[in-house]
Length: 401
Image 1: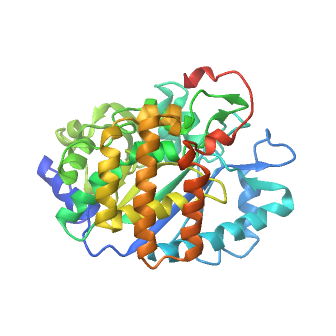
Image 2: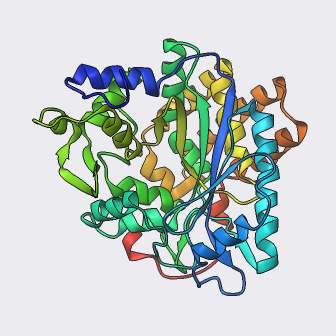
């Protein structure tokens, strides 16, 4: 089937999803995407012009380890590592490239903010493209939360191979979704937006929870991830319908209804539709883990290391699954309370212990192992997360209540 072929049946959608979104093979590669809010240290409430950032970075050498630089709608800088063989290689590559980018920004008084939601500024879109025009129109129907997500949030996204075979795919998928609330709580890092406390440890996750439930808030349901993802895609509204000279959102039309129409979609349309769905874990031929708040320049390697250890070591994964299952649905509690919730704190400690055991037994750089252990003893053992480091006092943000 070519990428331009018409889709005629639900089975066509299921077949495409199985072939393209769940590729199997020996787990080898690790990748990550680090999103950063950029601010002027002297004037943190002033938006940093996107053109200024682009010009600055274009005038210097590219990241030395090959990471790709792109930008999100609000001007957030995203650094995407190439797929690397193993955890240590991923960490070393991204560390070199983060240092490189930070060094380019520093002489101009610019910095990568150590938080997952903008603590200084209200949303302001800077990037113009048909995709984001349609996305903004789609989300504006639902309130102001869409613009907040698009322009004021940042994440650590971890990319891991789907699995060696169908059984391994199901194991890794189930684990990554089950530990989601634990990781939301352990790495919650977005308590203040635009100078005001939000009432959430992870306001970023709160945004995703209430943004658009059919496509953003809950894990893909069902025991079989292939079937679940195909049905999820069929039932989701069409955010962007691309036609020459006219990109528009069609929220009253689900992909299933489009497939049943007299002018059915193509596989290209399906491929694009899948990029507009944002569950906590998204299958893209690999698994893209989307639920971790952006971290400081000190701590960003930790969620990458812990997640990789848990999925790659079946014994560690079983221990983490047992720890996470009692809180597997506690997404909102995790976002609001972080590790102040005793059940999430216990689960996080058990997950970190399991991950450290796996990392200690593997070929992981000692410095990375030490960093994970430091995070455990700085935050997790004390029922704390990075959001607890924020001491600013302000009124709660009404929108996040």
